[in-house]
Image 1 (cartoon, rainbow over the protein chains, first blue to last red):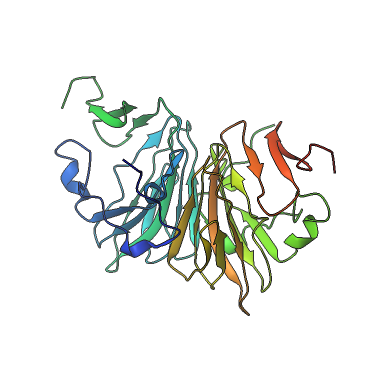
Image 2: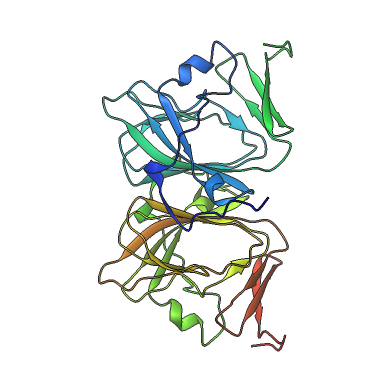
Amino acid sequence: MPEKPFPVAVIATEAPARARKSVYPAPFAQLMEGREKRPLGDLFGLANFGVNLTRLAPRGISALRHAHSRQDEFIYILQGHPTLCTDEGRMRLSPGMCAGFKAGTGNGHNLVNDTAEDGVYPQGGDRTPGDEGTYPDDDIKGSFADGQWHFVHKDGTPY
Amino acid sequence: MPEKPFPVAVIATEAPARARKSVYPAPFAQLMEGREKRPLGDLFGLANFGVNLTRLAPRGISALRHAHSRQDEFIYILQGHPTLCTDEGRMRLSPGMCAGFKAGTGNGHNLVNDTAEDGVYPQGGDRTPGDEGTYPDDDIKGSFADGQWHFVHKDGTPY
């Protein structure tokens, strides 16, 4: 069967949103209800990194505050003023601001939208194998294997 | 000597522009005069992929039309209407449009600004080793080794 050809270009806001809101186990999955991700890189067959267009509704959060062991991440704010939370504290962002999250630092990050308008930003991250996620504020840890995230409590017990 | 700490976030347009306009050999380097690149990912110490904020002046081009053997690329248009040139032809882009360029397809791409206003877009690409660049329209080929691009004529003779 021939592969479906990739598009030349797309309007990012018209890309389909990911059907499953979160891969976190309960009770964390429901915290992601205010987050919508539209995979963009996958539309073009990109394999080495992913790019999503993410929209955070008021009170939405991008993720649990987390750090990656091997994968770098990057965000570029297009709309709104979400707050970036890291070990350095809280910093409200504005359109035209960007931030990168270097793998292996252990410095957890997430975005929290404590404004009344949506926050919109493309986010990118590579897919280096063997990645692990650490969560300084929550009793969870993650490992990426066989194409998906696996989560356990910090003591290793399953969810 | 302690490492200089990375910033939490930056205003992308205030990031320093790359001093050297192009790594192409003559006569191609001068074709890049209308292109300005501001490295963004490097500011945060990202290693697995690079992100630049690129501005194309009227008549500027993003690169020679090229394809990567191993590295994926992605662009997201913020301002202006640069034209994307691929094997499929020419497509004028608009703010909010994005495109990805999958490694290994051999389908060359570049952006040509044939409008009277600047085109501005973040572009990202991973740093998978062993990458080679092919250039369907020009007598040049490139290989990435030891942290830099090496260019020769298509018959292997040096520039």
